Length: 255
Image (cartoon, rainbow, N blue to C red; front, side, top):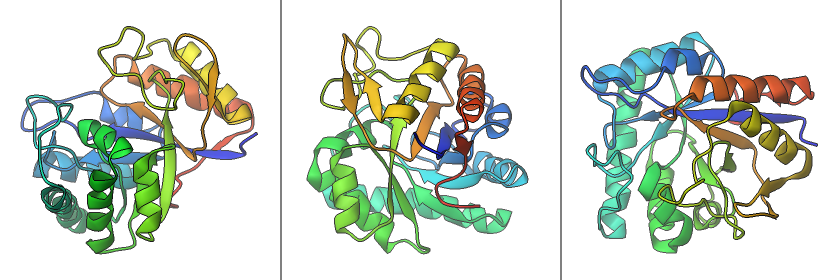
């Protein structure tokens, strides 16, 4: 049984007058916030506001870079050579770090978004490019990676602090990978079902598989997507269930 775990959410995913999700409510629940930094979403004003809101609640902040594809919300692969991926990640994280300096907040880790994260899960050269960028950036940044993936491997090879995560609101395959979003049942919506599922994971280290069975995964952080319908209710139910079972919710990167 885990005694503590981090609860993270992808936030700051609006831009201009357009908003995505209820960030303020999510920041009252989660312990870590993965903030978009101008690629799939986010701009300087949204970054600044998100950073200040997170700091006011004692929530640790990480950068959430992805493909520069707002129309596709970063969920489409944009063909790029690995060195260009490293530069894209560095540029986006650097932008968040710059705004964070104005906000008086420290960016503590990096988590790749969407299609970039999924590609890095299986392709060593993409994962290595992300690790190169993380290592080159200022500060001792940690890498938050999907559990059991190539990004975990390449991050550790690069000497980075690596923390694995699982997803509360996504279904898993038997090989430990996420079920693609276009497959029926890939995205979970019932808050109590998700909370019960994640409590079992905290107790056993095993994740239910779509279609039956379980897969063993190791993780110190759990993600609830901030853009999912009912995300706030889901995160609230999850935290309540975990803490009720004696599992403390704390940021993996420290306060």
